[in-house]
Image (cartoon, rainbow, N blue to C red):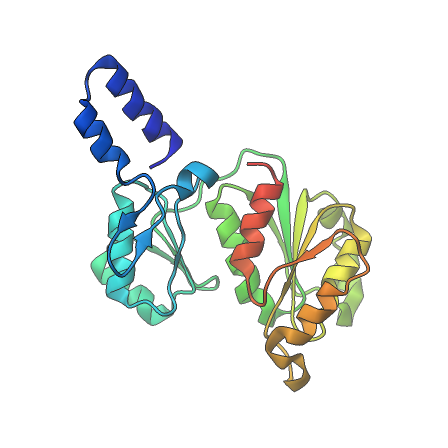
Length: 248
């Protein structure tokens, strides 16, 4: 259910083309669809303009396929995050035509449409090892209809690489900075630009990285006032928040 469908239903009811009984039957699924093992939030699209996103870990391929099948009757554009290559292959057998964005570990039911907006989000990664999380953010933004400019492998160990991209960073409406190890990149980016910077700590790093806790604490203690922080490896959450910052 989305705003367009809801308006159409109400219009058909006003014209007398839809009975009260049928209208109520349609609106019954407005809050959620009860599938026993999952309760799908059909109200999500009305709130955000995008249907509920499916998180793959912990679900069987059959459960993912059933949820996608239930949502596909109402929405063309679906997204599943944290999908392994093996899960993607099995999902293709059940749902032909799905697209697997391997670097981002995301499955979608259609390609993203090019954004007409001049505003863009710059997704910046400290290292190549941080790209899976950065790509999760980038692909999510593109599926939400936003423009993305990727700036990858520009960590503070070679600061000249980041400074070479100052123009791209400064002209972004919002930035997502993804970093593991000590997690210093978001503070540096925040010191360069006057836009919101969403920091994403990753679990990339040696032992004292503590699976992402070290960069998380660094980012939370940033002295750059334009830096906000999401959870470890949460590229999806950073992207959705950036989408809201853009005001879509």
